[in-house]
View (tube, rainbow, N blue to C red):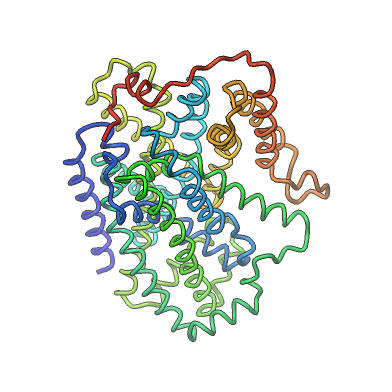
Amino acid sequence: MLIACVIAYMIVTVAIGVYASSRVHSAKDFMVAGRSLPLYMSFACVFATWFGAETVLSVSAKFAHKGLGFVSGDPFGASMCLILVALFFARTFYRMELLTIGDYYHMRYGKTVEVVASLGIASSYLGWTSAQLSALGLVINVLFPQITLNQAIMTGAVIVTVYTLFGGMWSVALTDVVQTGAIVVGLIVVAAILGNQAGGFDVVLAAAQKEGKLTLFPHLTAAAWLAFIGEFITMSLGSIPQQDVFQRVTSAKDERTAMIGTLGGGVFYFAFAFVPMFIAYSALVIDPESIRHFQAEDPREVQQILPALVLRATPIWVQILFFGAVMSAILSTASGTLLAPASVLTENVLQPFTKHFSDKRMLWLVRCLLIVVAVVSTTISVNSKSTMYEMVEGGYKVTLVMAFVPLVCGIYWKRASTQGAIFSMLFAVAVWITAEYQCGEDSPELWRCVPAQLYGLMASFLGMVVGSMMPNWIKHTQPSPEELARKRPVPIGH
């Protein structure tokens, strides 16, 4: 029964993606859904894309193991990112009528900065996409034990790729509406059932409080505080210069919808992220032996706590709800993380080679690159031993170091120049890579405990200021959005 329902859900998801293809007539439709999403779709896209596998399986397990003080990146940093985007970036993004966030770097700083920033942004998605494919493989493997984990990951990758390939942003938007409903209803019901089995909400809360899991700042050492701050900054700021965030803002039907949808999705994401944490800790109260997962040699095994308990201790209808919610969370995020890098690579890296492409050829190029991203991410997922949380955070380090400062300074500092942006990226990457070899949170020397990406962030700011204040040797004339549109074969107007 459970397996039949999961298969049926997969078929329905792919069918929605195929239906969405009827609305795709251009690369603009594929990348930003024709800039026409109403508020409920915009809200659902923001929430469903961010509420992924790491939130349900990895973050919740880390909370159950170590407590709130060790999940500063997600949900605290992740939801803060969406709130900051809504308040300080959404209006700017929407008014510029661009297809990708890489277009912003082109307009503000020129082609060189555009290509370098876009490569960094695209590469950052590999970790996030790999995390979703790992989770999908984990679920498929739990449901079909006769299939190996690697085979399950590859099977899941094919499913996500197929329905995203057909409908692009339209398939993401339509499936996100369905998947948001499945996530919310499914996890609330599962939380109520497992919470009741654990003795009630008060019992679970008291047990978590007694073990110190609800203390946000339990850190006694400077190194632990630095790790806490590093995770929060990496997720809250490093997530801002991302194509999936940009796509959700610019896919809205108007500026007000873009801002409210992003803000509402961010706030709801923060509130709802505590539901899987409650479920995970209920699992420990119900079955204290589940703690054995924390001592496993493979760090990924901790992510099996929830699926294993649900299969072992709940009736079939609860299992259907839980796995439906988990599959929804994974599929909605994975589809967005496949589409985003393919869009950036097509529009911002390969654009010099596609000047004479028709819109139909551009559409097929985006789809081909989406397949390439899927293959690379699947390869990483099959070979990685990291948890989903670690994969996601690793990806955001790249954009924090390379792309955040040029974006913020470009919008809010008039003196920011192309030369400053180049200095910022080069200096930041050099310092970050050097720090990765020198730093470690277990070092007895305090300066080595500072997360390497924070050194890179500071270097990025310094490079921007120094490069912009120096005599300007690198000239750049900023084009208008209309001029940028004329250079690409893809129309951007409403």
